[in-house]
Amino acid sequence: MKAPVFYRIASVLLLLFAIGHTFGFRQSDPSWGVDALLASMRSIHFNVQGSNRTYWDLFVAAGFSVGVFYLFAAILAWQLGSLSAATLAMMRGTGWAFALCFAAITIVSWRYLFIVPMVFSLVITLCLTVGAWLSGKEISVATGT
Image (cartoon, rainbow, N blue to C red; front, side, top):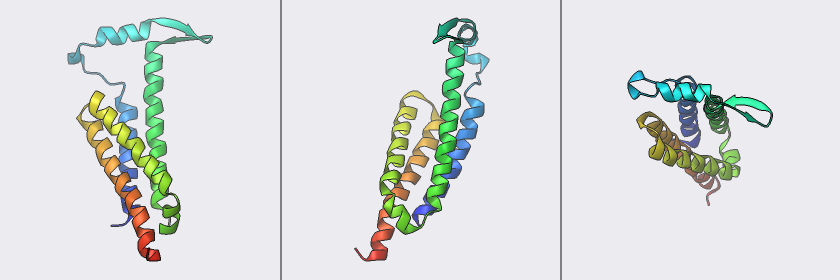
């Protein structure tokens, strides 16, 4: 298979990840026993640089920011999948940076999260890594080097 296929697979997974994260990060199960914590996060107000905020506000902002990042990453992966082999070869640094970024996200997911984000992160990392690796291979084959 060629690099664009792996970038397109990563893009679809990233879009699903963005949707799941955006709609799921604020959910809680009463059996977790966090109702008092969540109520506290919503009720404790403080002023930050002239704005009245709660810890819940910060939590929601961080969660939506991650969702926006995953959406951007999905678009980037789709765009990488649309490029010619020669253009992808010239953008190998971007491809490898993208793969390394998701390798770091996989480590964070493994350490602090649970199975769904771990699996998504791992598969996305593998797709991006193979895409970046194949990007260099395809141009080598085309040029005979």
